Image 1 (cartoon, protein in one colour):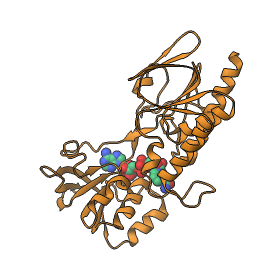
Image 2 (cartoon, protein in one colour; image 1 turned 60 degrees about the vertical axis):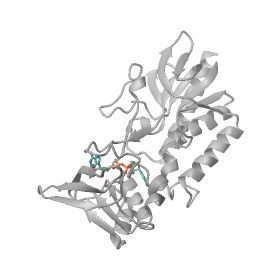
Image 3 (spheres, helix red, strand yellow; image 1 turned 135 degrees about the vertical axis):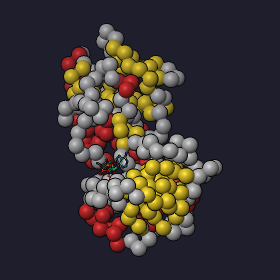
Image 4 (tube, protein in one colour; image 1 turned 30 degrees about the vertical axis):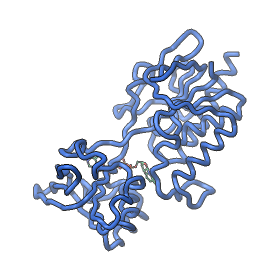
Length: 302
Ligand code: NAP
């Protein structure tokens, strides 16, 4: 029996583990993929206080090492169900079952799909959701980034350093991302803005050969290129917890700023929680708050 099991080893989960261990509790992190979560896809992190510039993988590795040194355990497994038992939660994984007095759900969010023809078929063959991971495969080539938020803007800038040309395709005529990034994108000669345009088809047989876009006006355009980086945001992956917690219309778990879901011994932290600002720093804060709440709960039970 663990004191706390944290589902997801992104920055929210790692922070919860650090705070849980420092509160004298046993803490295990259940991670289905790689520790660090979405953060590992950030080529540059410039807004984490006290760390003027770092990379996502570096920050993730440092947080993981910190949690590890404090004695948090990382278990590589996928949570498939949660069940309430008399005095604890049972977490059913694909490899084993685990029990904990408190559970912190910190499983983040997954990449949103465009849903156009060719996207699924050519995934991994030029369709990518991570410019930092896959950009180098398309050095010197023409590529596209789809989206208008901070991720799309950062991806376009990152790719412009190595690719011949970057088409930034956005469905509106205004960007959602930060002004500083929009200005930087506009200054790059090898970034072409394709605004008010939806990607309707990703073409190619064995690999991506181009995209077809449809403008708001109804006009269409075909663009030859080698890769499409889709950066249209994320969505939570909370179906497995749906019978236990309340969720908003987007599927985000409703929990207060202390991570309290209103369900005994069950907390939510990070990008899976309904809130306005999803950043590394807000996920870390969520993790600390949820671990503090879980620790108070466990102490009250004793
Ligand atoms: P986001 O801010 O939600 O932006 C998603 C973008 O994709 C929007 O421009 C949206 O268009 C577009 N989009 C959504 N669905 C679409 C669809 N079906 N077809 C075409 N376009 C679609 O997502 P994000 O950029 O991944 O950022 C997620 C969060 O992380 C944000 O809070 C962001 O600020 C944060 N973040 C911060 C930094 C940083 O501070 N350096 C870096 C990366 C991410 P509309 O604008 O028309 O809705």
